[in-house]
Amino acid sequence: MGLESEINALQKEHDRLDGLIARELKHPGSDDLELTHMKREKLRLKDEIVGLSQQLHAEAG
Image (cartoon, rainbow, N blue to C red; front, side):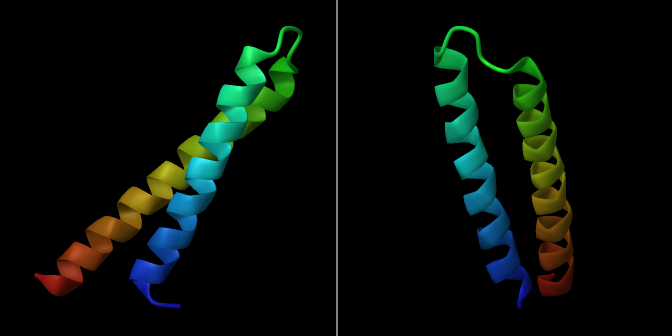
Protein backbone atom coordinates (compact mmCIF):
# COMPACT_ATOMS: atom_id res chain seq x y z
CA MET A 1 0.00 0.00 0.00
CA GLY A 2 1.39 3.40 -0.96
CA LEU A 3 1.79 6.16 1.57
CA GLU A 4 -1.10 8.18 0.13
CA SER A 5 -3.44 5.19 0.34
CA GLU A 6 -2.35 4.46 3.89
CA ILE A 7 -2.86 8.10 4.90
CA ASN A 8 -6.33 8.08 3.34
CA ALA A 9 -7.28 4.87 5.17
CA LEU A 10 -6.04 6.26 8.47
CA GLN A 11 -7.92 9.51 7.86
CA LYS A 12 -11.16 7.60 7.24
CA GLU A 13 -10.73 5.70 10.49
CA HIS A 14 -9.92 8.97 12.30
CA ASP A 15 -13.10 10.55 10.90
CA ARG A 16 -15.16 7.49 11.85
CA LEU A 17 -13.91 7.68 15.43
CA ASP A 18 -14.62 11.41 15.51
CA GLY A 19 -18.24 10.71 14.59
CA LEU A 20 -18.55 7.95 17.18
CA ILE A 21 -17.12 10.21 19.88
CA ALA A 22 -19.49 13.04 18.95
CA ARG A 23 -22.51 10.73 19.08
CA GLU A 24 -21.43 9.20 22.37
CA LEU A 25 -20.98 12.63 23.97
CA LYS A 26 -24.60 13.51 23.15
CA HIS A 27 -25.90 10.61 25.24
CA PRO A 28 -26.22 11.08 28.99
CA GLY A 29 -24.49 8.36 30.93
CA SER A 30 -21.96 7.65 28.20
CA ASP A 31 -19.13 5.26 29.01
CA ASP A 32 -16.22 7.46 30.08
CA LEU A 33 -13.72 4.63 29.78
CA GLU A 34 -14.81 3.86 26.21
CA LEU A 35 -14.72 7.57 25.32
CA THR A 36 -11.18 7.82 26.69
CA HIS A 37 -10.14 4.78 24.66
CA MET A 38 -11.66 6.21 21.46
CA LYS A 39 -10.03 9.62 22.03
CA ARG A 40 -6.61 8.04 22.58
CA GLU A 41 -6.99 5.95 19.44
CA LYS A 42 -8.04 9.06 17.50
CA LEU A 43 -4.91 10.89 18.72
CA ARG A 44 -2.72 7.90 17.84
CA LEU A 45 -4.16 7.87 14.34
CA LYS A 46 -3.60 11.61 13.97
CA ASP A 47 0.04 11.24 15.03
CA GLU A 48 0.50 8.43 12.50
CA ILE A 49 -1.15 10.51 9.76
CA VAL A 50 1.14 13.46 10.49
CA GLY A 51 4.24 11.25 10.49
CA LEU A 52 3.34 9.59 7.21
CA SER A 53 2.45 12.95 5.64
CA GLN A 54 5.85 14.31 6.61
CA GLN A 55 7.51 11.23 5.16
CA LEU A 56 5.52 11.61 1.93
CA HIS A 57 6.50 15.26 1.61
CA ALA A 58 10.15 14.47 2.33
CA GLU A 59 10.17 11.85 -0.43
CA ALA A 60 8.48 14.23 -2.86
CA GLY A 61 10.74 17.16 -2.08
